[in-house]
Image (cartoon, rainbow, N blue to C red; front, side, top):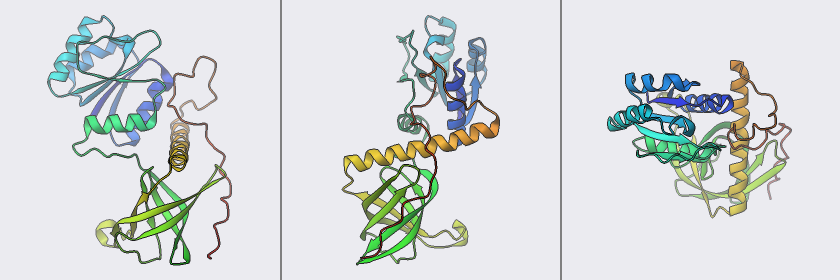
Length: 266
């Protein structure tokens, strides 16, 4: 398991990033005080360090420790602050605050994974309507990204086959009708816990549909992280004045409601 050091004094950023990175399967050591940083960098082998920019400005001891750590193969990402734009003599990547979840996912994949995933996928259970050959049938979407999805369906679909998908974006009072293409099929087997379904890539996705999908995924992700925060007893209340730069750049959570009725078969 990849090991990360997260150094940040802004509590909301620290808690949110800590929870998000652990949700993605990484081992995270979150440090809220700068005084502990140098010893941890020297004594522990990290694969990635994410550190507040203010903690690196003109701090030669920290820079020396980081240089040694990077020399052993670690990567460095620096969280921007209002006060400081660091000029570091070390290879690093700057992260804007608030942090965009898609940009963070892409950066983490590039730094830590041998075979980086291009798109962040959201696990969920969402009804979806498949329409082909003038017939429509309900299916269940189990994962979703801005480029495709995986779903269970009673239709027998062949690899490469194209069809229409209707998705009710629950909680947003929106419905998307998309064109999809079967990229692969999964057959039930003991090795995959008898999972079955098709991997679908979106075809000719229009910009407005892509933006709506991105917004929906961000909203669902925020809902999931808010639930996990509440489960761990972390603060989930409304932001106070001056806190707008201390959270992930996600839209406000939506109220879940009954999805719109699917279209009737023609």
